[in-house]
Structure formats: structure tokens, C-alpha cells
Image (cartoon, rainbow, N blue to C red; front, top):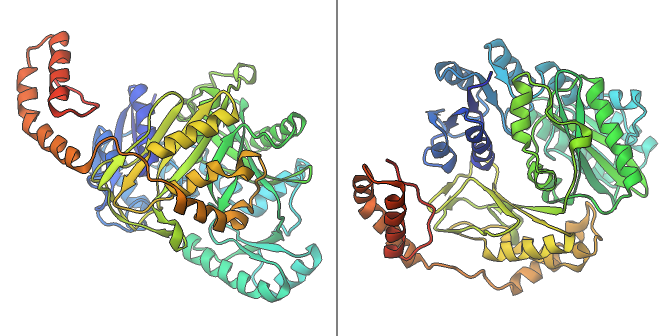
Length: 513
């Protein structure tokens, strides 16, 4: 039984996991870097421990520190979130060796599927279509040139131990291959500490489609449908949808079978995502990600299934509480990733303090955020700071809802991609489903022009009001705590309303006592 969980992550995903754990009445533990000491996710946890330092290597990638804290905190399990150590088999093994539960697949399965060649071999054995390429590492440019010539240009060079779109380079001809090869190799060594790379054919005008899976240790595997993730920049997704409306139900059923068969073949447990490319009526297997995906929320919106809760139940040894016939899909969901980046300066990361924060609300809107007023955005970590997810009865309704929500989403103090996302929602190619993985390359300049014409979102409160609000909160804190010690619930609610009226600000407040 799992009663206490450490989340070895930060930001919005840590907050999102803590929320589910709280609903399950499971005690929570956060770990944090120096820059994150005052972050929202730290305050969400029941207990928190410093990791000392700021670099990922010293903090969220430091296995020894995290295991030591987990033992000291007497947790039962560790949830890795996404990124950082989530797909490191050595971390899963260290958790297992410490006598703790790793909320994810076994270290053995992570190692197996983390090896791109092994994953391709498994898919090939199951007669799942593969992108033309070589099922082994390439270590010299001469061999790369020979293989590229045989499979045809353009080609993609990828780190063998990589993921998350990092270290991937395209070569459209032999002249570009050498530069792409050595860049990928260098990036592979720098990020993944393994300079092995492999080569495969690169397809243009393709769709990136993925299937969400859940599997328990008793051999039960279900899929939660597909996601359309084609809008990407530098192989990083920025807009995701569920369901995908660009492929037939017949083809969907085919990729569902492929995804489930891979999971069963490797005795997969937990939540996983199988990624495919779709081009001209054909699908090709890419990989199986052994973690929760950033975009899992769009699937949750259309299935009403809490994927994190399923992860915890599976890790605790429970049988899946649902079967395939229990799963139904309703409506259309879209997710936009909010990045602290300067879109007009090559998407350069933007760091600093959040001086104004206003999140959208209303029917069918979900915000997974790791920031608030006065939060500090550190340059040490990934620039994604929040996710905005909406649901509508139809795709058109979801687009309209997302546009409205983006108008209400205001973040000041750092630059963000919010206006860029607004432009995408208004773009006719996006609205008419005429998008693929090259969409942003082709439309970037047009989208930038649209952002320059975009009116800023309307602030509900000006900065002066916020300063007054913060001042009044501090002034009234002792009065509120003192007055509510012996009050009835009705009296507490009346006092809370009186306090809100005094400062003339909408608030989400709680009263202790």
C-alpha cells in the first residue's frame, strides 16, 4: 500500500501529481533546488526537502541525493514525473534497490525501450511498420554516408539514447550530412552521456500521432485513444489535440493494436505512450515513452480518467480498475504549452520574476501551472511554465474556447508564447486541419505578423490593485486566524466574504481553524 510519495520533479507536473495524491489521501514530499525554494509546487507538498544547488545535475538529476531524501522522509514510493530522471533505468533501479516503489515501469523495461535499436527490433518482430533506417548505432561519418545513400535523402540523425526531440538533425543532402552527424553526436554525448547515434529516413508532410496506454502487472493493457501532436518546433510539441481528426477510424484501430501489442510483448506496466508518424495513408512506429507525457491532460479531458491515479494504483500492485469496454470518448480537447520564451528572438528562454499573473477560468478550461504572482522563472530548467487545456463538444468549439482562454491568460515579467498560440488558433490552416510537422516552419513568419496585430489581453485587476490586495492580506492574516478559532462554519463563510468585499478582489482563500 502506498501512503507517502516523493515527487522527483518540479513545476507544473509536480503540482499536478500532488493534486491527485492529495485526493487519494496520500502524503506528499517535494524536493527543490535553491531557485525553487519559494515555488508553488513546494508549497503544495506536505513535506519538502532542499536538494542544494541549481543545476539539473546537482538537483533533479542527482539520484544519490533524491534516494537519500526518500529514505529519510520514509516514503513508500517515488513518482518521477516527466523529463529529468523519468526515463533513466539507473534511477528506477536505485529506487527498487532502496526497497521503494517506482511509479512507472520496471528498470529492465525502461532500459529495453530506451534503446532505440531494441525498440525497433521489437516492433519489427511484431510486424509493425518502421521508418527505413538501421537498427544499430553509427559511429563514423563514412558509414553514415553509405546508409543515407541507400535509404535516400532527406535523413534524420538521432541520439540512440535520446528523447524529447533533443539532438535530432536533418540532412537534405550529402553536403549537409557531415554537419548534422557531428552535431547530433556532440549533443548526444553532452545530454545523454552516450555519443551513439542512428540514422533513418526523414519524411516531410507527416502527422505525429501517439497512443496513450495503461498496463498492470497482471497482463491487462488498455488504450485511452490517440493524440494529434503535429504542431512542433525543433521537434518539441507546443499544441496537442484529442482526438485526431485527420486519420480514419480503421487506421486508428490499427495503431491501437500496434501499441497494445508492444506493451504486452515487453510486459509493460504503468502509463506509457507509443508514438507514430502518419504519411500518405501509412503509419510508422517511432518509440514507446516510458513515462507520463506532458500532454496527458488532453486524454484525461476526453476520457475523464485520471492517468496519474491509474499510475499510482498500478504501482501499488492493483489490477487495472477499467477494461477497454469501460473507456469512452467525449468531445474534443486542445492543449497549448505556455513557454517563457521570446518568440521574436528565436524562442530564446526568458527568465525573471512574474510581476503579473492572471489565469483563465470557466467551463471546459483547465490550467496546469507551476507559477503564480511573484514566482521566479529560473534559467536552469526547461522554459515550459504552464499548460492550458480546454474541452468543447466539437473541435470548433474547443478552438473558440482556447482563443478566449488565451486572451484571458496574462503573464508579465517574462516573455511568453501566448500571443503566438493565439495566432495559431486564428490561422486558417490550423482551423481547417491543414497542419503537419512542418507547419511552424512554413507559417512562422505569418504567425509572427499576426502576433504584432494581436491586442493585449484585458487585465481584470491592475498592478496597483494587486499591491493593495497583497498588503491587505498581510494586514488581515492575524485578524482572520484569531477570529476563526471558535467560529461556526456559517460564521467563517460570512467573515471570509466580508474580507473579500473589503479588498474588492476575487480570491481563492482558505481559513484554518
